[in-house]
Image 1: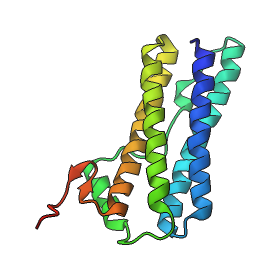
Image 2 (image 1 turned 60 degrees about the horizontal axis):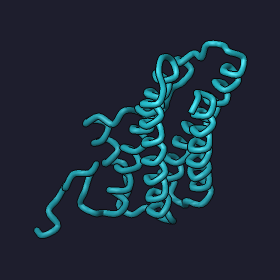
Image 3 (image 1 turned 90 degrees about the vertical axis):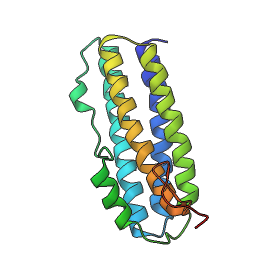
Image 4 (image 1 turned 180 degrees about the horizontal axis):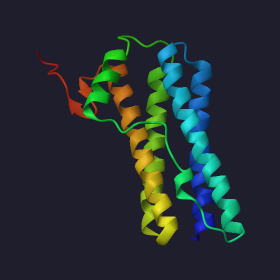
Length: 166
């Protein structure tokens, strides 16, 4: 698969997850949930924009500026995770859990695509795909954190937070 094909496939993934987040903004009745999904939708839209920009440049054999690829979603570090947890309401309303489950599946699928595409690429294109992979891993982490809290499963960021037996 050449670079243009990889970017076209990536565009399909990015639009799919962006549309899910946009839909969630319209259907979720929790303000915090809306804000989270809006931030994720905006981030995915910036990926769509970058991929479209990149496809235009690839078509004219010009250099892609990797610095234009970014993310407003922070890397979940310990302090940030603690802050997020404190702000999550005990009971989120609407279909938040359903959307988070769907989002997690799509984010993981998208991450896997980028990871595989990295192995199939080289040079500047590989650098871009690695950066996309890193960003998508952040999205997976944020969605997983939100899902863990919304479901009250006892897990937090994939680790058992409390013993359900006690």
